[in-house]
Amino acid sequence: AQSVSQHNHHVILSEAASLELGCNYSYGGTVNLFWYVQYPGQHLQLLLKYFSGDPLVKGIKGFEAEFIKSKFSFNLRKPSVQWSDTAEYFCAGSGGTSYGKLTFGQGTILTVHP
Amino acid sequence: NAGVTQTPKFQVLKTGQSMTLQCAQDMNHNSMYWYRQDPGMGLRLIYYSASEGTTDKGEVPNGYNVSRLNKREFSLRLESAAPSQTSVYFCASSDGSRLYGYTFGSGTRLTVV
Figure 1 (tube, one colour):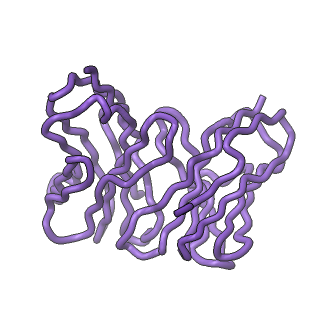
Figure 2: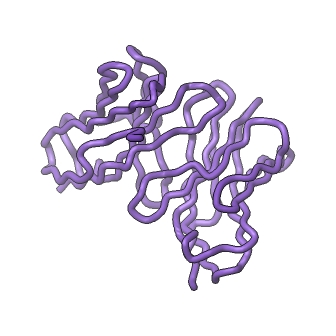
């Protein structure tokens, strides 16, 4: 079955620390991968997406993610987090026979202390 | 610049009551989706509509029905609400291609008592 897993439920960092959130997927064939962010009380917003080509994808707000096919991973990174990055982050994927239907990971809550 | 509009934003129901969550998009998207969000479980697909006139079950369809009224509107109905349906419901739309992610509505927070 197609699935997306996020292993960190809650990450707590201080401002200026580096961030890496894990995401693993299980899809056969071509896969599309996304990271979404949900700020408190708001809806999900797209951070970045990967379809093909350069495995290092840059998104908004200084975030980037690297697609590593051999590890079935698409981890989200940011060199230096800010208090305003406090939010819940969701990895999502589609592919195989389910183009258009996104499967979401469980989400990772990021808390950044000033 | 409305995007995806959901109504209502909040609702409290008694067990056994029915209600319909409304969703409309103004981006001329073909595909629309209903998800529920529960703590620690991410978003789970309830129903989706790949195009006007079609609807299909997602991962957790039991207790729900949907109607794709036209290309713009996709409603979700709870016929007999249960406490297990307490959740935040998100509607989303996409152009149905593999090139773009979803655009989400602002959500409906539903409590069933």
